[in-house]
Length: 118
Image (tube, rainbow, N blue to C red; front, side, top):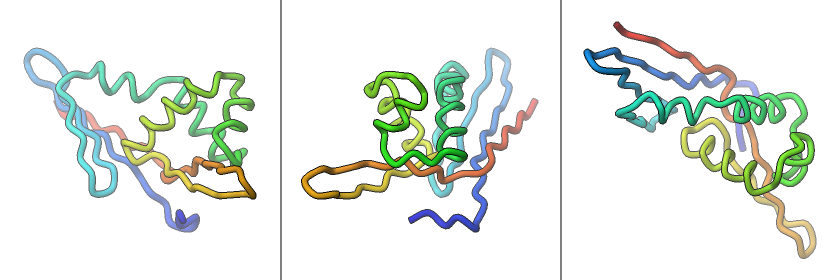
């Protein structure tokens, strides 16, 4: 379970070289290197920002309920959540209620810090 009292920050480092940006995300103990800023742009989209906002303030109990709040299809929301989990922004809590299994996305971070080195 995620500690609600402890604040967690995900750091994104951007370094400029002669031809482009080279960035890396430092999420907890994981380090994700990108050779192109386009990959970082795919991670930091408006839709993913909306997901993070809803997770923080509305705390949906399942991916299905999150998709309904966002008025988006389940598959697209699930794909975005998997990406956010990969980079340490969220976690999944699995629960079984009777014969049904529910997966609840939980926000793991409070802050995203972006630093650009030129």
